[in-house]
Image 1 (cartoon, rainbow, N blue to C red):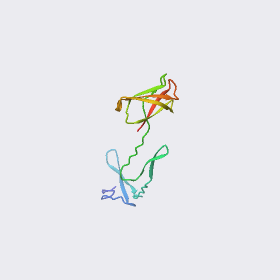
Image 2 (cartoon, one colour; image 1 turned 45 degrees about the vertical axis):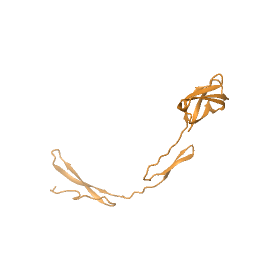
Image 3 (cartoon, rainbow, N blue to C red; image 1 turned 90 degrees about the vertical axis):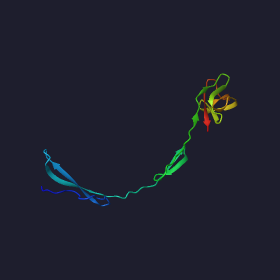
Image 4 (cartoon, rainbow, N blue to C red; image 1 turned 120 degrees about the horizontal axis):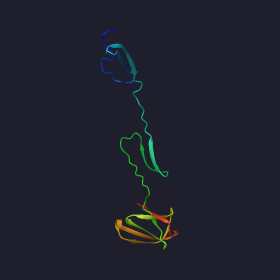
Length: 151
């Protein structure tokens, strides 16, 4: 083994096809150099293909938003889901009451997971302190009901 250097003598720019020699130095237990070999790396490809597929967000089969995979800006898809109130039980007189409602929204009434016909509705309070008492047709005493909020 003779004195000298191994590996590149300057920075190497890794363009396609460039070969870079990486030195591998082995030493004994005293730190003396016992071997010098090198590994060769070749840059095989510096050109990458970026596709630009379109992604579609659907809700129940209906398109809500689309965006491309390689776009420069952000996209937001606002998917609105049903919002439900807490449950209430139909009384023996065939009424059900829900409190703490916001009277700026509409509501669909479901009992036992079926949309129910309403004979009449009584409203008390206002704003977000509204109570709606429904007189029902087609619901039985003890049925569990909930309101779907229509925003």
